[in-house]
Length: 267
Image (cartoon, rainbow, N blue to C red):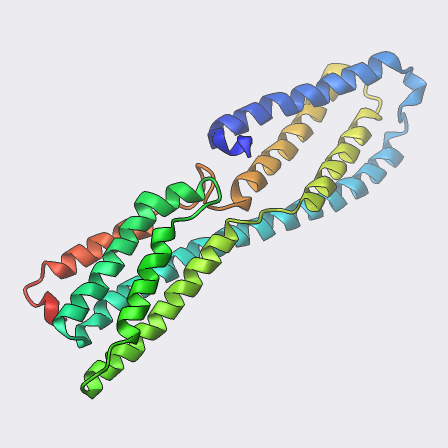
């Protein structure tokens, strides 16, 4: 989607300019074309009605915001689970023969670098890196075909196989979270609700039109702000405010520190 190419703060600024301009312009047009008796003069009754409408819409908008934020936060936690699986595989390889240990650890380090260099940029457009799949498969095949000679090697093999499966699942869940955002039907409901709220704002009769338009513009700004927030968080790896690869950078630093220790091959 072309909107994802727009920096988040720029999109917010555009929304904060366009939304109130359209809302206030629409209100001025309506009030200039219709006579005063067309609008609500008894604001006590009309105010009660719009309070009900506004509350229902606020509940809907709040529910959608919480849902999208939970989706975003879950995706963030999945990334840390994924890096934890890679770290566990790297550490548990200590129980394998030296050649096998080096290969498994190299796969995990290459996987972390692939996430930073290839997969994260690819996820900006909804894609992924096929090399990530290849590295997981290589690690799974390498350790799966290994024939342990003692209990320590057998335990290491079982632990690594379990962690490789967890890594595969965590990556799949992460990619799935970046595939589907807020459904079009729910966006339509939000837009309809916003239109109804603004329509009620138009129908009030206020002695000072400029103050009335200022209030309507404020409502439009709040709604636009929430819409931008929902848009930016619905697909957590595609925007500027999305999830960054800090967890992978931290993992690479950790592996590098461990690898520099004198007894790294026997850890």
